[in-house]
Length: 391
Image (cartoon, rainbow, N blue to C red):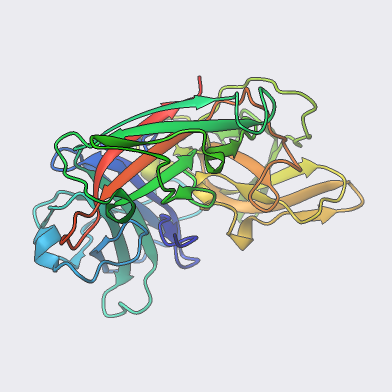
């Protein structure tokens, strides 16, 4: 599966805070039921100038590559490549921006197939240089997925890992060759960078299949996410050491994080970010942009850590790479972010083993997605889904 192709992200410096929200709930993963859910895509352009942006809908395979076997009329009713007409300038912010948004279904476009969708946004007349991508999936629940997560794993017991076991009931779907017809994805905290993809079942039955005692489904348990909240630029919020103004930006320096010696439960949201400010009204256009300075105290690590969360698209973004300040014995990076609540972790090569550690007690979210392409079909339909928490 491509390392970044499935992420919602900005593709240029002037576009920030690209979001996909399902059914008006920003805490939910970007998966909705076909013909039932509402998908909203939004982003900020960092000026008050008007740009005529066009969105383009593309249907994807299970691995998020573009499906060139289906016609546009197969997956879309109405018109594609339409202008984004809902936009509003920021109000009463020191950093100006324009907030653009659009949703599905809309008066021009309705999506018809269960599966993966990629939305590309580009300025009119410049399709070859898109400015943003947004990815989401539509589900047609035709198979039942049952699952459990255990800390009694095949490599350790109540130490540093969690193991997923799941079973699939085909229900009324006809599956002749599950290895060829099914595509599976198992994710921890919605992360694609360490997802287990297309693992063959080790138990096959006429009515389904099972994945049990598979070492490939053992995940490092990690640790609870660090978190901070900036609701008012004039007050230090949760996890913030100090707020300062250095023209032309507000700067928030976070409390210096230290490597934990033991597990300590602290409720988090498994890597999400939520845009809001103290007034909690018109958050999209009245929330401020400011530089947030992340600090992590540590001896030199084998490689530089990255600030990671769902809002950073894994650990691939070079802007999120922390640098070592030898005189202070800390790693640090500053990122321009929109006001709100954020979860983050310092990870080295995608893992917290060298930073925050791995503790079996950690509360994690797991998602299991089942795609089905019957013999003779031209696309991967998302037909099974389960989302579960470890506590």
